[in-house]
Length: 437
Image (cartoon, rainbow, N blue to C red; front, side, top):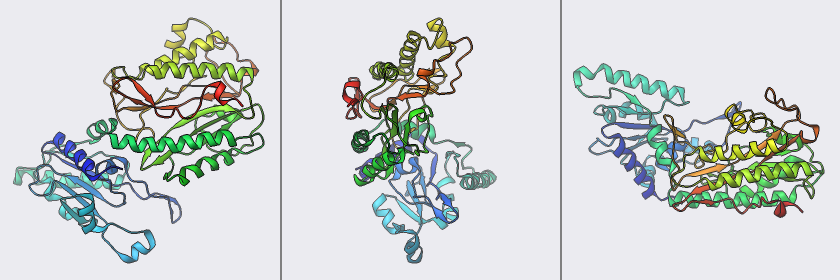
């Protein structure tokens, strides 16, 4: 659980960085599934990171230069008739106490009240994101402030994105955040281990999905962190396969890429295993290459190493294995430089993980990759995908039929520690001896 003291510390850290500016954050919009049916509300990650407030139609304002109100919220007021239909609201008075704002106003007063928090700011910190209506509101408001600058002699002269500041903060996970992420991982580990035992020839992919997601919710998770991928046979060669409607067959592989969201923090695990008992010879050979690539890549996840190093390590192992099998031919370094391996391995080896599955934060600063630091959490997920209709790079060998239709990915969530790393998802077996029946 993240205490209000930590949210307060985050806001103080942000305000120290923006100086005489004013930062504005808008809650996530309510998304419509179809007609008048709405998706379950999911708060904007930056807004939640700074406030812990989990309602729509809200605005947070951070104004470190204001003498009385440094943290201000605009929220939906208590309104019984609307709450009967749409759910309970915290309301103005309770929000001030429970969220720790210096002042709270009804959201309808935003345009009227916002001026006092911007008139003496030297710039507005606001990310022009996907909420086009609110983007337009901020730009119009800024234009009005600029029009009155000559008379007042104060006001924001620029708009600057909050992303570089907030996302840099979010990249380093606190002890409280890691505790929540460990719980997300623990639930996801249980679900994966159950799914491996449950998956049998003749069952459908959606049955496995149902078992996974039942455990997610039963154990207190919000639900899946992303649409669960349960891909059997050649479906394993589709990176974001989510139809999950095929009947599984003996001697095929099943690739499961699934994780839960717990307290808004996410797990992301992929395992590939045989449906039935044993790998076929071809499946086993390719699986060993991917597992070797993953283990070598994980060894490079440690403080001071550039982010890209574990990806480059995985690529080198995968290419070496493909050359040994005759699936790639030519000079090793040239194959890597010209990315001739891309028909078999077309994605990167990982991403940041946290409040978002593909979490925020820069991977590079200019031409330099960011160095890994304690508190970073990354996924490491190399794979090989030999699509039945694969088209290799020019000058490369044709792929024999026996390899086609095999897709393998192995993914773990890795915490960078002061000493090296911790594999948070180690509870899901991945060695051949551990997963063959």
